[in-house]
Image 1 (cartoon, one colour):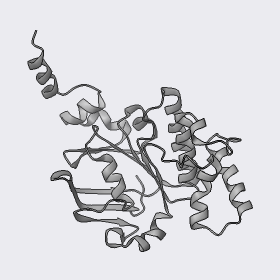
Image 2 (cartoon, one colour; image 1 turned 120 degrees about the horizontal axis):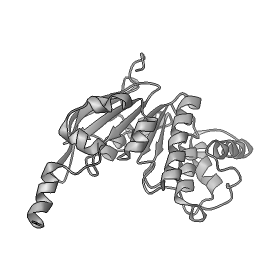
Image 3 (cartoon, rainbow, N blue to C red; image 1 turned 30 degrees about the horizontal axis):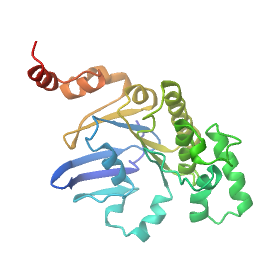
Length: 261
């Protein structure tokens, strides 16, 4: 693990929606320069947790720190400088349909840099090459495949050379080959940029490939914290069911009652 101070720290973070507690006193340190993967079943709050790391959501209680700055207490104006250092790959890519690929990629540069139009265009070419999409800058998102849209979104996420890249379900909806390409990009960008990465996923193939560390969110809390080579050492039932891709005993019992032999 990294010997540096954690770049992001969550302390006793709780968040509820309509009376349902999704995060329940979460404590988590994100080590600098490494890739932390957060796993857990659908609907367990992984994406909610990720959005707290960039203060797109605020906790009901607890605090989130970025480089020892309490971002929970910051205003939207104060958060601008922090968010420039954090790239976010949204689950659905979240591209602007009315913009070309190039315009999508340079959007953060237009908002947060003083680069000339020529310099922005050159940066777009460089970024699209980095994600294997050279020559597609004039196309629109509707002309791209799902995997290509994810890569455009990734190019946009790294446009400002962030210190942290947050990935929300980066391989969801992709075939195995395209998913593996995204995994390779995550690994290579972490190496070339030296950025810290946090990947939310339920794809264990992806988790095993990209992670330095794997944590599991369940019941609103972190219930396991391990590394890919030590997955087999964690004996917790909910962890084993998830990692081994099998239904839990309770779930099987429920369908057995509904469909008895």
